[in-house]
Amino acid sequence: MGKANKKAKAPSATIAQNRKARHEYHLEEHFEAGLVLEGWEVKSLRAGKGNLTEAYVLLKNGEAFLFGARFEPLNTASTHVNPDPTRTRKLLLHRRELGRVFGGVQKDGFTCVPVSLYWKKGFAKCDIALAKGKQKFDKRATEKERDWNRQKQRVLRQR
Image 1 (cartoon, one colour):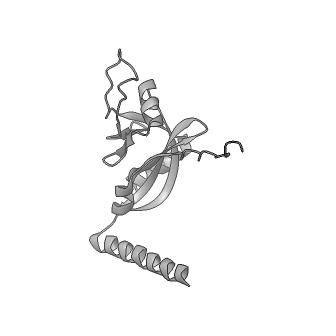
Image 2 (cartoon, rainbow, N blue to C red):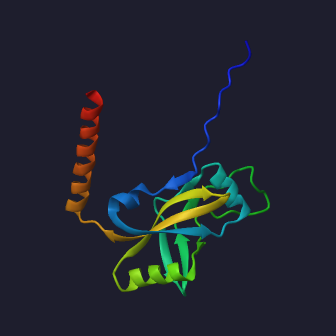
Image 3 (cartoon, rainbow, N blue to C red):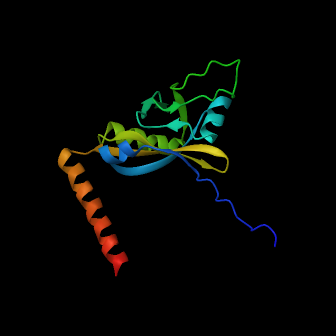
């Protein structure tokens, strides 16, 4: 009798999600953006120390920047670098995508918010979305719909 073959679950590709953005906004159009990161930031993201709750995207001079995202530095990462957990990080998008984001923000009154951070082929990516703000009654309606769907699933499972 040998050891049982236990397969370890593959780690999730998602690093962090901005649940507050899903609650506060109607997310319309999504874009995948690369991030310009330093070495210690990549290490902290691999350890799952990223946070997007207070983050937002600023469009300036034809470029997109991620403000307010918090990547907690690891104690073991680097001793000669003074890490800034909330530094501004540049987002990498194609020119057409940048044009669509700029057009949505300036003409249509959308806001650009980060939705999630994840790994794709070894690179950190940020899912950003053009969004419109929700009113209080919209938030309540979304919550009611979510509760109703949960109840439906419970009833269907009990059958």
